[in-house]
Length: 146
Image 1 (cartoon, helix red, strand yellow):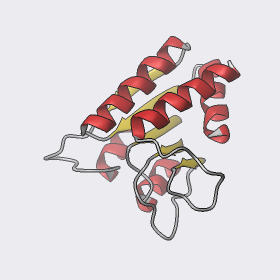
Image 2: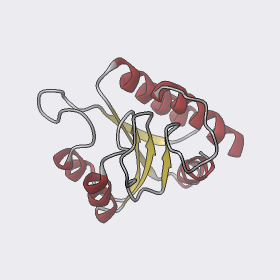
Image 3: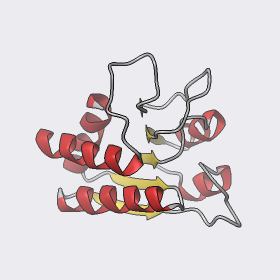
């Protein structure tokens, strides 16, 4: 969480473009709202993207990322922990990627700037929050740095 919060705080201070890419379920939409509202209150230039279930489906979608690409920071919330190709695409398009997810990670994590997931076994214990809890804790951490 420290690395994610530090990058988000730096983006807020610099006025960088922030994109919150959330899932379409109740947890994902709530987490998206928490991040967007929290980052905006802290002074961030934030836009939200919630995929359409029938079009983009669950998780990070390459077509959506291509439309969102460009310099900035992409926060994938309630998705992303298994999206290796999509995170790589976002990075190629100039986005730093932060993943805040609570789903089961695969054997390989995406090459994101930070991957925060309570189910990771290779990091200090994290309270087993759903995505909206991770989003809230991320905002708390960013606010502490600002």
